[in-house]
Image (cartoon, rainbow, N blue to C red; front, side, top):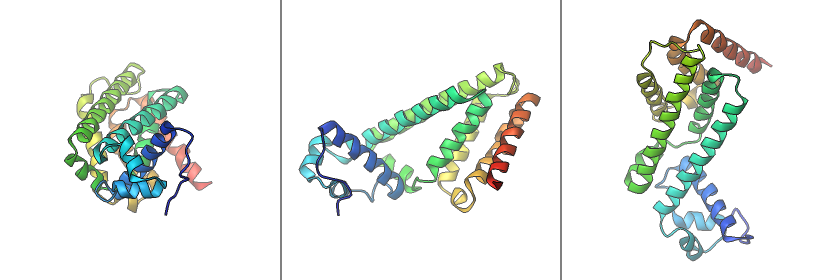
Length: 214
């Protein structure tokens, strides 16, 4: 049964809708469990129309990853512009990351390796994200929030590893979003904070705890 109308104002509008729906399906069900037949059926379009826009599943997957990365960068920019300092920026980015993890099927990362173009793009996006995170840590040092005697390349790798681990466990499904975030904060961020950074971190955690009680 189609979830959407078969009438669209333009081919670009249809393409955008295909990408939006497909990324959600890929993330929730895994890549293998989403077929081009599924996509065309849910959109109420013919398979011919779908293949005219996306000649194969990998092309569709690549477009989904590109759209997801653009959306992620947009949200990070909004967070950066609204944050008072780098500490707030880092904390909010972690929130966004865990929120996204909650909707990703663990099989997604295993299955994407079977699609070379998509997998290379995924790795490229990850490296770009790691580079941005490293610069955030350096900005935090300059702002007096993070210690200057720490190797932030290593810290960045450890944090990335923690999030990768979460994808292959039920931790973020068993415990609340905040409990998982708090554990990561205490494990990694507190150890690199200056006294001023720790103060801001504690205020952030206390605010979140109070908001949960309300």
